[in-house]
Length: 202
Image 1 (cartoon, helix red, strand yellow):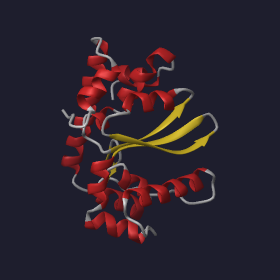
Image 2: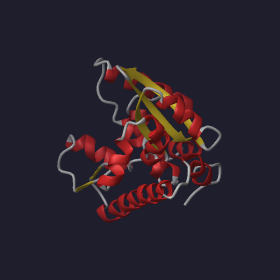
Image 3: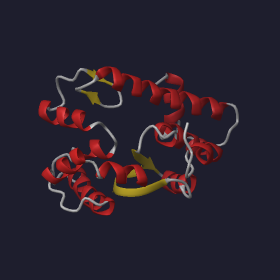
């Protein structure tokens, strides 16, 4: 990600909070990802719900730690399709998930995430699956304990580098496109409505 975009994402002035959220969630809004994990501060959670409400995204508050709130923002329909695939169902079952419906999975994940943040449990590797990382890379990460990866970008890649590198480039393109729209005066709400609505996509 370019330094200019990174600076815009992490700039903390209140007036730019919705612009920050659009840039952070660009691949999700653009339909390239099915979910994002966000660490929000201050008024950002209210702004996020206001900005994303009414579209195709649902927001799950995971936990609060200090001044930060961890939030899982997701496209429910895409998550449902993912949870209906054989490999993911096997992975989650082996990880101790008995209810594989969206609500059951997210509730158990939230409990495990809170235990991890509170230092009462291990890191929930199923987070990678819920963020849409390919199962082969999540399992590769677990087997290799985060080492021996072939490529890294938005996650550590263990298989099929060319396809993953292409996907990372698309993620970067979504950041750049939304950044340019914002610079040209398009409002965050208009971007979400156009690309993140019920049928929005690039």
